[in-house]
Amino acid sequence: MSAIVVYESFWGNTTKVARAIAEGLGSDARALTTDQATDEALAEADLVVVGAPIIGFSLVQEAGRAQLARERKAPTPADLSHPSMRSWLEALPKGEGRFAVFETGLGWSPSGAHKAMTAALTGAGYTEAAPRERFLVAGRYGPLKDGEIERARQWGVTLAG
Ligand SMILES: Cc1cc2nc3c(=O)[nH]c(=O)nc-3n(C[C@H](O)[C@H](O)[C@H](O)COP(=O)(O)O)c2cc1C
Image (cartoon, rainbow, N blue to C red; front, side, top):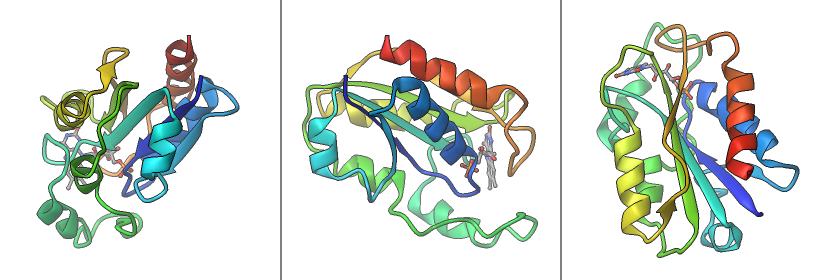
């Protein structure tokens, strides 16, 4: 099975989860930023795993993304160097593969980023392979809670099965 994990990440938590999922999926699987996840990469994948942080109870909008640069208490500046997940989803070509979505965020937070990702992938013709998953952070900018990297790796193993 050929799989890719496409992610958006501002402070690195979702990057770490995406890489752990890819590791669990197998040696051929790759974790890709939105600019690395080209139409060609998508066309070659049987399974597309897509993930993003929850920002403001949702998948962040373009305007909200720009505001992240002004988060003064953040440990590092928000990484805004890759196209937004929203713009990547909007340009998604039609596909027939399977997909799974994940989000990173706080355990108590209602709603989430998953809805927008699931809607776009379903709308493009992909079929959901597994229920969505959330990986938990301890605070506004992370870090990931203990055990979440391993849980992400295991989720990848399960998806591969
Ligand atoms: C401006 C801002 C808004 C956030 N809103 C939410 C939220 O609504 N729900 C939630 O669970 N987490 C929220 N978080 C926490 C992030 O989802 C969490 O830190 C995430 O793991 C960041 O991922 P990243 O490091 O990959 O960018 C927010 C963080 C920031 C900075």
